[in-house]
Image 1: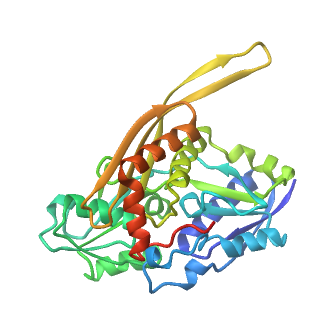
Image 2: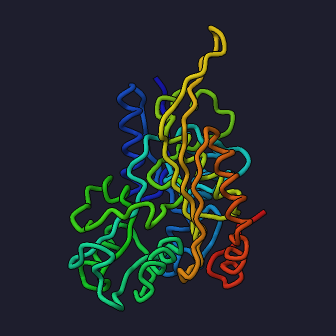
Image 3: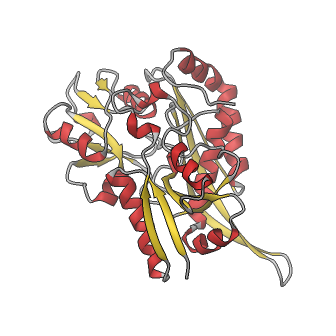
Length: 325
């Protein structure tokens, strides 16, 4: 059996994720150790993420540990991983996906629609802000940083009337008491890759890749590959007002002789590009069997319908930093 070293951020959620993968590997008899690594994103806590805009801000230092052979694999929230990994790395597995939708959390209100005029809502995501503004332009939206516990504490102390968080993180940590509404994807399109974990290794590390193969979920791999292809086509990072939600809606098998048998997953993709003030939201929905092609096609369509102008304006206003070449 192998001895594997996992690199992870030190937040409560990151550690849950790393320990979850550790437990699955230990069940297979492997010896696993965990190294906590502080990333750029962990060090910057007083600025809205969209204004920081550093590419790979939650992954760079962990990838350095991988490159230096201090760890063998890294466990990430997939939505934190840039669509183009730096040279020398690959995603060995994408785990079975938790609920990718966003959660409306509040002490006093059951739904977004129930909030009073001018209610103070916390989120640092331009994607969430834009979609909130589209349905409730009267809301007062304020930045919200910190780990899950910090954000929930600020809500409980009355700093906000409501906050928006990813359902997946709340479910994983068992902190669901203040969830009042799971927001339908048609109302708030999730971030690309939200709810899935990406296991990153050194490119070409075939032995570690083989050990992790059992963690790779075909449906999650197909859906998130589609979403990340869209994000890549739009040139956006995780802090840009882009939403992508793909789900498997069936499959068909193809026989190419006795030696080759393949299964194609039928995907449905819903995607948005939004102006941060919610004044304009472009939507695209389509179906297909090729995840990357489907994502790219939706990206091309959204750019052609004005998505390029929205994104250029976002970058021009300094709300997000464009991806580095």
